[in-house]
Image 1 (cartoon, rainbow, N blue to C red):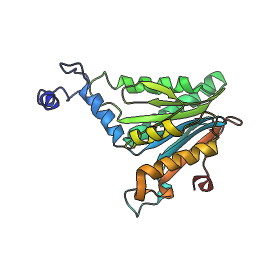
Image 2: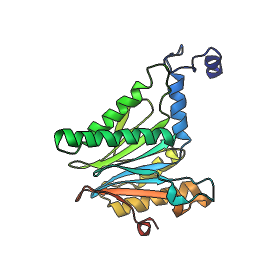
Image 3: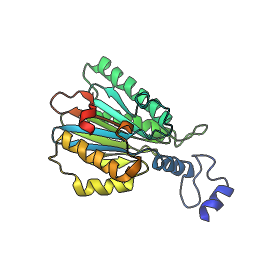
Length: 233
């Protein structure tokens, strides 16, 4: 009822206006958009870090290989976006440019936390200036600097580092599975099996290996690699 009152009074028409109880409703709507997006999972393993994402193909006539859910940002960094994927694509393109600019300027690859902070700053910028809406997307970044790392940025511009996490429509159920099954000494192959198993459980009869996208970065070579279909079965 209070939300309806806020809407009638126009507090949800701009991200610049606080409601009387201190909320930015446009930002909250952006976070709700993420909750309706397809599920993505990130896991840090002893030998690297991985991403597994559901493409959620709604039209059987769509060629599954034409849908990309996991992107290479730099040789040692990957990302996936959940929510409004078009917003994610723009931010990931910006991340790619930042990574290349850093390498050209300083002669060394950008560190993952530095890149995550830059993208999070862009997201936060769009929550406090008029004439634009917040980005309705959460992005999972994986990478290997000295050690494998996993970060999540949300529409507010906040970011956190995780050992394992999930975002999207089945976030709560998948996180529950990760909390029970995750082990810090698991390998990338074991992590992939756990993530695929979690998606099988939450998707049920809708699960199809063709709608799963996965990638990993090994600690040994620090190279972004798309997972072979054999590893996903």
